[in-house]
Image (cartoon, rainbow, N blue to C red; front, side):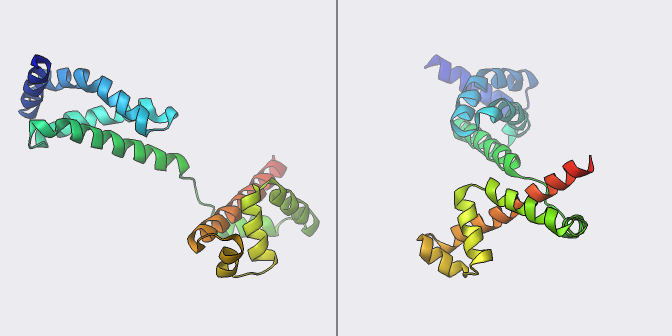
Length: 179
């Protein structure tokens, strides 16, 4: 019980802007932060989430209205940071259409066919299937969704990702030819 009182006193002191209390609070809550990050972050993001969350806690603890809300607020900060890092991991630079078209147009038809076949072979089966149904069999998204017994949103997403992977493959092949 005295540990909770000490922690509550530390939180209260940190809320008033006491720099020593804020530092002590960060030390005390670091284990909780790390444990929670392990549950909600990718393994590679745990240290980053902890490192990014602690300054947020130190800056915003003064805005916390109730000492009792600290733990849930702390976990919310960590969870948001884990989600932010996760989104950043999957974010990638979009290829500009004009640059893509220009690079692809500069290649011979035979080279492009060979590279396109290799790109299609490199696709995971679930992406290849959707791409072939749409672009080669010319089925609509609804028809593909019916055939695969999938929601239309999932089909659209998979088709978009398949096309991106093919484009990236073709662009990477083009870069390796220029080296």
